Each structure stands twice: as structure tokens, then as C-alpha cells.
Amino acid sequence: MSFGYLLPMRILSVNVGMARDAEWAGDLERTAIDKRPVEGRVAVRENGLAGDERADVANHGHPDQAVYAYAREDYDWWEPQMGRSLRDGQFGENLTTAGADLTNTLLGEKWRVGTALLEVTAPRVPCVVFRNWLDERGWVKRFTEAGRTGAYFRVVEQGDLGAGDGVEVLERPSASVTIGEAFRAYHGDRDLMRRLLALPGHSDKWDRVARRVLG
Image (cartoon, rainbow, N blue to C red):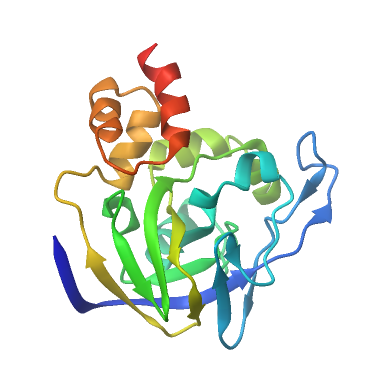
């Protein structure tokens, strides 16, 4: 299903970060979760944005996790829950979006952002580094229950992008599952997992998750 028209969705902020040592950052004690907004055009490469690093490449170095997006609207929902303001990039995302319902984006959905083409691949699953970074009690459980996960993307076509760019949705596969449904599949919904596995081109990481969910 092809759309090809410009929706009122845009990139508020492009955020990158360098890896640094941190005692609280799990077994690796190193993290690049502290993403900060940058100005100008940023190159989008096969494995992510220029100037952005990953410390834990074993868990975050997969090409299907090249770019992570989080919605400003979800930040606005979290702020009263957490009792503090949240800046763009606070959750470690590369792209802070406006006007995008990321929870209802579809796996396989393709976005043209600047000159790059991105494809939705997976929800974010919270980890101990995310919890420790925010210093929020019970954060993994709270984030999971809220289901406002943001979305990971693979890079289909390299290019460049910048804050203020619009998002053009080029394709929404009609038989797909949403990011929210994929998150439920990850947490044990067997019917949704079977639907997800039937999607052509799904990430091979889902095959490993399916072995746990389906047995």
C-alpha cells in the first residue's frame, strides 16, 4: 500500500551521543544513551547516524536498530507521570518526532526523512541501563506497562536529514502488526507473534524472540 503524500509529521530534533564510561551502565559499564541535539544536516549511514555511537554493540549494534525515534507527544505524557521535564533525546533516541503516533506505526512501514529512507523494525525494550540512566524507581515495569516504546528503524537508503524535516510515509503494509502489537508479542502474545513471523522481511531478531515465546 503506497501513500506518497506528506503527513503533518516532522523531526523536532536529531540527537547523537558518544560512548562513555559509567559504573551504572550494566556489566559493560559503558554507554552512549546520553543523546544530545545537533544542528544542521546529519548523514544517515547503513548502521545509523554520523557522529552517533553504540557502546553495547552486542545488544544495540544490529542494522535493524540503526535509528531510534521517540515522540514528543509521548514525552508530554510522561512528564506529569515522572514529575519532571524531559528534553529531546532524554530517552536516548536519535529522532524526536512531532505528529507521529509511533505506537501505531507498522512493522515494515517506510518513511522518507530528508533524503534517507527508513523502515520500521521493532519497539524499544527497556533495560537496566535505561533505568539507571533515568534514575526512576520501577522504570522497566512502568515503561513496559505504558507501552509507549518508540520505534526502531533500519536504513533502506542512505542520505541525510535534519531537524525540521517532514516525514513522508511511502508504504504501510496492510497485513502487518503495529509497534504496540509487536511489543505485546515480545511479552508473550503468541497469536501476535505468529502474525509477526508471517511478515516477509521481518528482522531475524524476531525469530530468536519467537523461540522463547512459542517454545
